[in-house]
Image (cartoon, rainbow, N blue to C red):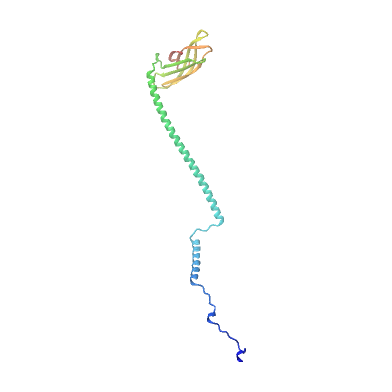
Amino acid sequence: MGLFRRDGPVVFERHAYGRRRSRSVPPWLLWLLAGIVVGAGGLFYAQEEYLPPRLTAAESQQLQARVGQLDAQRQRLQGALEKATAEAKAAQDGSERLAAELADARQSVERLRADLALFDEVLPPDPRGGAVGVRAAKFANDGGRLAYHVLLTRERKGGKPFAGVMELAVAGDRAGRNETIDLGPVEVSLAGYQHLRGSLPLPAGFAARQVTIRVLDRTGGAMQGMRVINVR
């Protein structure tokens, strides 16, 4: 009967396999966490002690705005430089073109001087031998005007250029009557030679036949050269 007695406490003995295992943190995880903490601390220390101070949001916006302004200014300066370069090249091209044109003009002048020297030798001299020679002349009736082309040369070389006038005494007929009229004066200024071209009005119904050319030092002054030429 003693088997079923409940007077004393019932004690249950825990089996070794039924015990709960205590959980422990692995050492490698502790080392990893310690390394992260030390690295973060070192980075913070380096930023604070050695690196430039970090910008605030407002300072960053100001810096970006300043960078934009500098970039715009750089673009303007680049455009100005390109424009100045193009203008300089155009000026250089223009200078080279002008230099070439000047060289051509000089060659033309030299050829003209040679032609004039030959022309002066070939033309017959003024038979009157005045200070100003009337080397050649051509006249024509041109619709109520007298067209003229006169070549004058200075026989006395050197000194100041000659300045005077050319007067034309024109002989012709009008309504069956012979008449002589005076035309001019035409200003003359020559150092070596001068071509005088133009036309002068004639009286109505007047047809020129012959022209007397008179070169004077001034209107009504001393005669420097004279020649008579028929009108063609």
